[in-house]
Image (cartoon, rainbow, N blue to C red; front, side):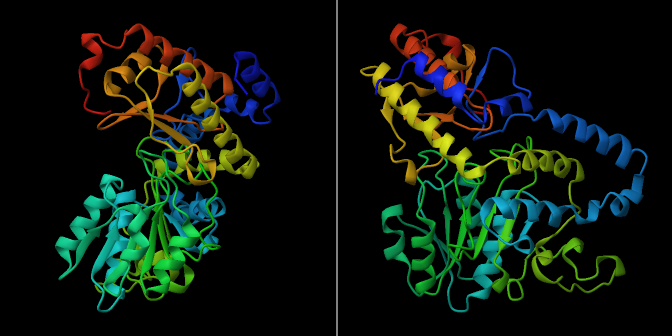
Amino acid sequence: MTLTLEEMQRRDAADPFAALRDAFDLPPGETYLDGNSLGALPHATAARLAATVREEWGKGLIRSWNKADWIGAPARLGGKIARIIGAAPHEVLVADSTSVNLYKLLVAAVQAQSGRRVILSEPGNFPTDLYVAQGVAATLPDCELRTVPRDRIIDAIDESVAVVMLTHVHYQSGARFDMDTVTRAAQAKGALILWDLSHSAGAVPVDLNAANADLAVGCGYKYLNGGPGAPAFLFVAERHQAVLRSPLSGWMGHAAPFEFSDEYAPGDGIRRFLCGTPPILGIAALEEGIDLFLSVDRPALFAKGQALCSAFIDLVEDRCAGLGLGLLTTRDAAVRGSHVSLRHANAWPVMQALIARGVIGDFRAPDALRFGFTPLYTSYCDVWHAVDMLHDILASGSWDQPDFHVRAAVT
């Protein structure tokens, strides 16, 4: 069917999640389609941070490590995220950044795989994943990062591969790997699998234990709405926890951190993958985002996200035909994330023109316009408005202004 504004309004009126938009502090007059980079601010977060600062820190002071259970926060939030990614509560921790957690798990995986020294990934994986893997390969003796195109990953797994490191939903194209199939293929060849869930957690269904995944990492500031620089999370399947050892042997990962022993002894279970002092303010903000997400029917929410993506693609193809756009993201909802990327030869200035009109997406080099559809607060009329602005900007050529061509530090 040809989508109309009236149809989008009808869908919004029937949307069971429409009221959730009011839970977020969204600037009036803007259409925010960049929650795949930075989630919007929940109203509850500001109050939670104020209470954490004024009461727990200001009045409780050092006592809050016990009385407010700051010390238990990494495991408590890990248990909540576990419900979103299909893991057991004792298999997930909130700690550090995605990059740091990647380093910990990659080193642990390679060192545990005797005689195997290859980290296998794909070219064009999210840069930090490849950079961290390059750093691990430069640090561990005889270790190497090997990349092959995504359609050749399974065939490239051999007896030299220690760990396969892949991003479940590709940051640019939105393409989604079949987690079950790739995990089984890696393990059949004796390799471990490490999934980056940064564009998956809170965006699409994830069930790590159903897939028998070994390891995973993910960030808290995208679909989980934890705020800029929010702490990340890591997953280690229970069967590996007694064997794998973190290379960052900080005091919070010690078996008895407050005995202040000179010698390191790794803690039991997932706790051994803690390192430094947890960032309590960041954790407090992240918990509000997670709690809001856990309050909804997640399968229905994910279905709405895919419906928003499909509506956007249909409208672009209908209203922006012949205006230089190419679709980078698949039309198949079963194998994509919750964002859509379009190609355009002048993607950077086009996106700046959109942002100037109040439609907030982002640009990814070399030529991608990226739009995130976070169903907690994105409406069908947002989709209509974004395509309406995109059509006008392309048809009028209004993107071709000097100011829109100036590159910023962050794209």
